[in-house]
Length: 538
Image (cartoon, rainbow, N blue to C red; front, side):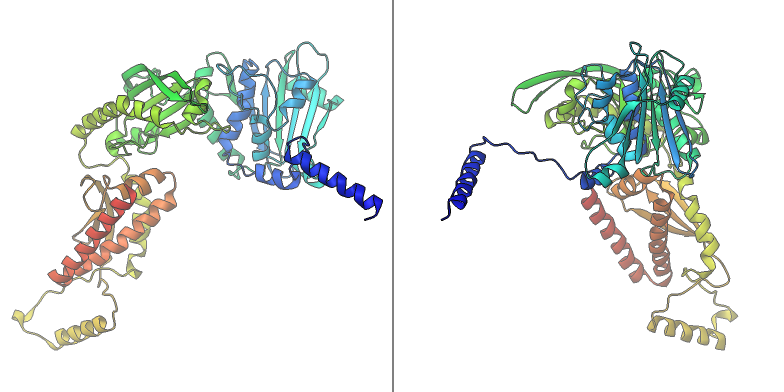
């Protein structure tokens, strides 16, 4: 072996030995081009991402936070968030735009402790994130800019970090009007699901009013210069007595769990339960007193991170009897791991010990609220309007749909005429050719109702009343609760489900008209389907 080759071999062996001993650490930087694309699809929704950025303004002790939503010269949505908080110096600004920043957070109070908010939320919403900031100790306005296109081009995590130019300085002073503050500008918003600025604005107003309601006594929030008023989903603080909720219970519950080191920990969870007022169905619908909004508002450090949360406890499920039930689960960020809070701060996944403790304490109370509601509940009408779209379309198209055939009266003293024989022959051909019967001379009208038939009842009940096919959804069945009630905001899902049940119901009515045997077979099919769906979904 040549001397040079021998030396190289010795170096290679030495390096391998050192690596095996853990004595030779090498850089393991990610591929920026691939990782940045993954980070842009990390699971943020529009509101969670915007709320994460607002968290930083609250942590900076801002007394005024303004959000502007409009479109740029290329007709793309542009979001600007302005605060009069304490601002940042160069070192803090440098950290703020890093993934997993090393800024100092006080866990008990701060909302943005994960060090991921501004960077990942910005990436989830936009290709360009621009930050202009100034603190009271500095005379300079600083600028940082992260551009996804530049990162992909360089295949490296880079950003611009410099002083603001003259134009940016004038813009900052006009917007902040304070010795300190920060402006976040999100441009080329490719991650926004709402294509229209007005639609996004409505979502932001609605959600910010609820998510940051507990901060609005000290901090003023604006969207496009319109001040946002706090929205309490428990309706305990509203001024109108007719729309005010009733406090059912409010307690602190001590819970215990074991951390990752198997050490026992304990903490306190504050829980409120509220019953919304009885009111007119139209008002209830407008106020959102429905199954979608049932459940708990989850508060972490007084900031809402989830809404309409219903734990998976036995006997607790979305149901019309709980339309007026609202709750609030509040805890500090010290319990993040135990409560299963992720860095997006958009939900919880409690450890078993806490989940079981709350189940024993809270589940009976929810069932009591449901029981009280059931005594007053008759046929459910709260959600019927959600099925009107399907009704209108079915009734419009009824002339071309396969519908139950109207039975003919026997005339002429019960004697068969030539016309009767021809009709019977045609019916025989239809059956042999498996051509479905259709209504003759009338258009059957679809009508949807909501009724209580119990969890063990069929998914629906079908009746023919005159020219109407009346389809009664069983709101107690798991299929309705999980497929319909949890998707009330998605009109297409409701409409398609109504079409499916209408198709089954029209066939069932047709068999009812033919003979008892076929009717029994169809009823057995519906019963079997209902049982299987209940077992699969429960």
